[in-house]
Length: 124
Image (tube, rainbow, N blue to C red; front, side, top):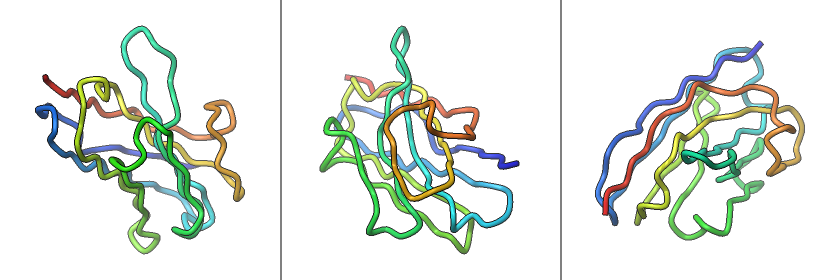
């Protein structure tokens, strides 16, 4: 069983930055792939970014490339999402997710465990 807790959300003006954090409980954190997803009101949950066991294996959605950076600290059982140049369309609840294996799928159904989410609101 893995438990995930996100933090770092909040209200920010367009062009600003936020850093989301996700703490994972459970054993063998370094073997998990970690991901960030988001869900805006009235929309489906969508892939944002993911990172494998090593930083060399990562992926992100085209909508956030060049603005968001995912990273992890295996010693602390944490994964981060640095979000820069935020836009109003980035407003959503952001969720941390975990799965076994090396693949980094964009489908939510491929991820096994989820956090409760943290709200990010970007004002124009």
